[in-house]
Amino acid sequence: MREPGFKSADELAHAYILLSPSAEEREQAAQRLAAAALCGAKDGVPCGRCRDCRKVREGIHPDLIRVARLCDDKGKKRREITIDQIRAVVSDSVVLPNEAERKVYLIEDADTMNVPAQNAALKLLEEPPRGVIFLLCAANAETLLETVRSRCAEIVCGAREDEADPETEKLAAAFIKCCAEGDEAKLFRWCAANEGMDNAAATAFAESAIRQLRDMLCRRKSSLSMSDRTVYDLETLMEKCLGMLRTNVSVKHVLGLISVSAIRE
Image 1: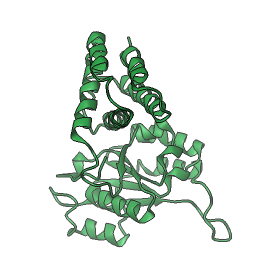
Image 2: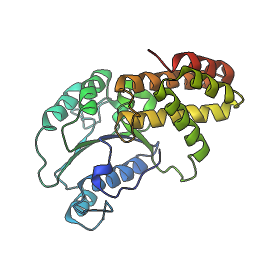
Image 3: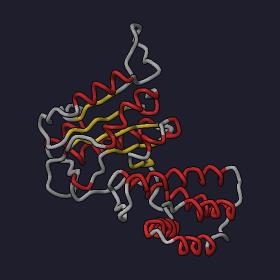
């Protein structure tokens, strides 16, 4: 997913993973999203001119809370973000904002959270207090638990506008709709009609389906009447299929798995 624009802060998801090997790109994207969340303008956020936008830019907004690796007694950054740090976020998240209508927690190097810390964040990412937004900056999403990733919208920082192929997006959307309808015969026909895809096209389809399903889980996209459990199970299946495609399992075999596993009683 590319960095989106927003008419109002109400359009923001409650949690994002901001991905880039560049710390500067992650920081720039996080600042833009934080400004959009805290902006005092009524539309076209972030406006870049209001007091909240200026304070975010200057790094002094009291409702933008940063979480980073702590330093040891020699001033060197520790290897991990710990469970105690995340527990402190959990406790603080229920406190009302100081100035803006929302609070933003920016977790730097979120991919350094240890497993207990990530598990402690799960409930918060799934059901955050009203008006609380989380920005998880990471160089590598693969080190984050799938349960964490599924609760966040992922943004590839600096991604070009032409990276998402509209036809692939439509194909993935049609597949998800087919699953939501629960019609096994229709799903079988869809799989049969698309088994001629090459590996690259099938990989792009799987990646698009995963992105759209994660957007459903974080409420940026309609779930088409599917329960969160159903969406999560489908996203897990597509992750498995993506892994198979990346190890050169045939497209026909992968679509065969989808045809018998994507719709469950």
